[in-house]
Length: 247
Ligand SMILES: Cc1cc2nc3c(=O)[nH]c(=O)nc-3n(C[C@H](O)[C@H](O)[C@H](O)COP(=O)(O)OP(=O)(O)OC[C@H]3O[C@@H](n4cnc5c(N)ncnc54)[C@H](O)[C@@H]3O)c2cc1C
Image 1 (cartoon, helix red, strand yellow):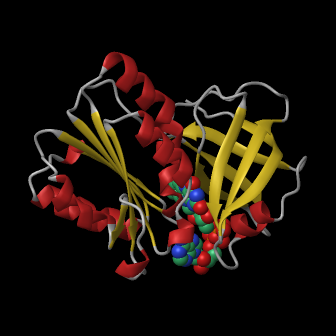
Image 2 (cartoon, rainbow, N blue to C red):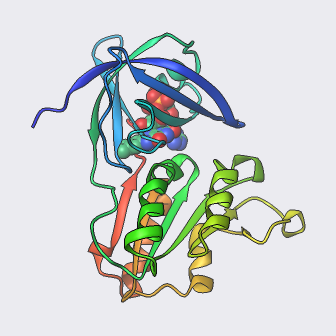
Image 3 (cartoon, helix red, strand yellow):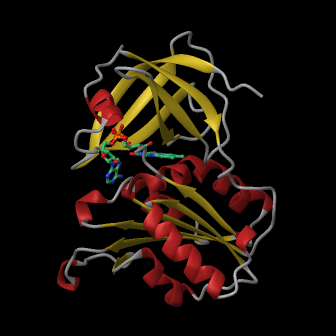
């Protein structure tokens, strides 16, 4: 099936970490954008000789006032990075989608383990409304642990929102893992030193009960996937969205 391509107008953008820009678009024709939480869109950028394609996860929940948000981590000299970081409200980009199967399925695991590095947390932000619906209505016994890995404290994206969600939902836990921080700077109970996979022992991951989602840095995903399958996880219970970049 062909995926529709549309023109999108930038509504606003703001920096949310030293190198991460949060952007909100709407379709130029003001029509709603229909997608499932966890999916991504692909920007089509006119290059010198051909069209270039760069994908970004949708960062907001479906049906939120027709807008479509994303978070772009700046890559030095990057084509899409330079385009997005220089957009002004009202500017137009072209994108196709939605794409992807990195979505919550209709299933009843004991626990979801949602793991991300950097902007890889955006699909989980998009899923919050669906997680809320399950926790409050259909699956009150479901547990969810969200683990976000970054290098430094100021790179933690959407922290306040995740902490608030965890405060409102006792079955939802949020952990931040810092890979380049000294233990003495940690202040909050949700903070840890190390890589995302270092939390797995504390969380007592279980191949029988847990379904794991991994999103972001391809190296983190390959390492973690290897670790989990060695521990007995069935491949279908470890779902991956790699933020591969073009060469
Ligand atoms: C399914 C999917 C979803 C994605 N979602 C997001 C998202 O939500 N947010 C987001 O910020 N990115 C996301 N990405 C990555 C994004 O598509 C681009 O690859 C990224 O933004 C860099 O594009 P660019 O045009 O700025 O850089 P490019 O012009 O592609 O790259 C410039 C140079 O930097 C190198 N490079 C590119 N990326 C990196 C990197 N991460 N680390 C080191 N070197 C690099 C390239 O090899 C090249 O030499 C996603 C990728 C996929 C496949």
